[in-house]
Amino acid sequence: MKQPARRLPQAGLTLIELMVSMVIGLLIVLALITLLINVNRNNSEMGKTNRVIENGRFALQLLQTDISHAGYWGGFIPKFDDLTASAAPTDAPTAVPDPCLAYASWNVAPYTVTGPPLVSHKSNLIGIAVQGYEIPAVVPSPTLSVCADKVTRPKASTDVLFVRHAENCVPGVGDCPAFTAGELYFQAARCGTTVPSPAYVLDSDATLLTLQNRDCATTAELRKFVSSLYYIRDYAVTAGDGIPTLMRSQFGLSGGTLGHKAAEALIEGIEGFRVEYGIDNISDSGEAVDFAEEVKWADPVNLTSPRNRGDGIPDNAYVRCTTAAPCTADQLMNAVAVKLYVLVRSEKATPGYTDTKKYEMGSTTLGPFNDAYKRHLFTQTVRLTNISGRRETP
Image (cartoon, rainbow, N blue to C red; front, top):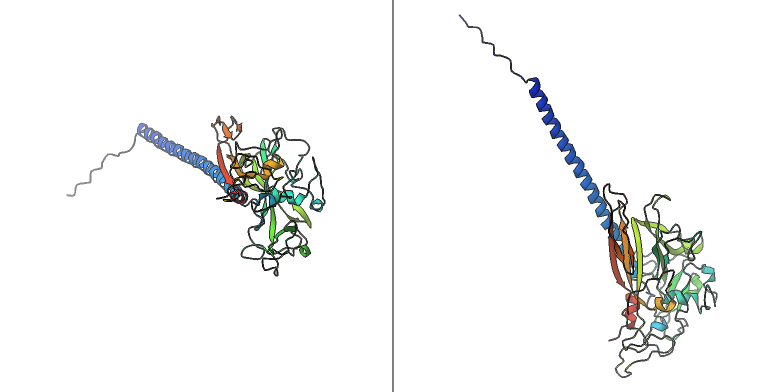
C-alpha cells in the first residue's frame, strides 16, 4: 500500500527578518545614491575647472597670436626704427593716437585731440603698434573718454588693448579673403627709383594703391589694415547676467563706413585683464633713445649698436597705462614686449566654496573676492618681434 507523501512544514521570513532586510536594502540604496551624487558633484567641479583652464589658455593663445604680429607692415620699416637711415627721422609718433577717430578725419593734418598737433594720424597709428588704457575702479558715466561707442559696459578695474598691423596674407591668395572695395589696405613702396614719402599708402581708395614692386613695373602687394580692440564686458549674453566676457572689436567696413565695428563676445568668464609694456628706451651704451637725431653709431668702423637708439630689449620695470599715469607716445613707440595677465572665473558658483586667494597681476593685486567662484590666473609675455627685431644688431 502506497504511503502518502509527508508534508513539509512551511518556511518563510518572520516580520523581524523582513524588516531587517528592508533596512539593509535601504542603506545600500542610500549609499549608492550618495555615491552617485558625489560622483556627479565631482564631475561638475572637474568640468568647471577644465573650462576655466581651457578659457584661460584660449584667451592667451588668441591674444598672443595677434600681438605677435603687431608692427608688421609688409616689409615697410618706419624711419625712426630704421637703423640704416642716415638722416634724422621725420615720422616718429608725436602723440598717442585716438584709435577710434572717424576715418574721414585721418587725412586731415595737423589734427589735434589733446596736446600738440599731430604730424600725421596715419604715422602715429603705424608707429605705435600696441596701445592701451585703464578702465578705472569706478567706470566713468555716462561714457568713456576713448572709444566710448565701442567699449560698452566695460568691467571695472580692467584694461583695454589695441593691436595694429598689416594682415599677414595677400588678398585672394590661399585662405586670405579676396580684395574688397572700400576696405582699408596698406601698401609698401618697393621700387627704389620712385620712393614716395612716406614710403607707403594706407587708404581705402583703390586708385591710390599704385605703388610698385622692386621691378618698378608691377603693382606692389596689398595687405588689409588690422586694428583689434580687446576689453572685458561685465556680462555675457544679457545685461546683468554677471558673467564677465572677453570682447573684440575689429577695424573694417560696416554699413558702408570704415571704423571699429561693434564688439563681439569671444570668451566667457574672463574677469581680470591687465596689460603691461616692456619699454626699450635705453641703448646698449646707456644713452637715452633720441629720435630727433640721426642714428649715431658707437663705432662707425664695426657698426655696433647705435648710441641713441634702442637695442630691442625692455629696460627697467614693465609699465601699465593707468588713468593716473597714462602711457605717452614715447613709451608706446618703444614698446618691444607685452606682458598679459588674464584672470579667469568659473561661470557658476560652487556651493560651500570661498575664494580667499589674492591674485598678483603685475603692479596690482586683485582679491580676495570671498565668493563661491573658482578662479585661475594666467600670465604670458609676448615679444613684439617686428619691432624689437629691427633694433637688434650683431
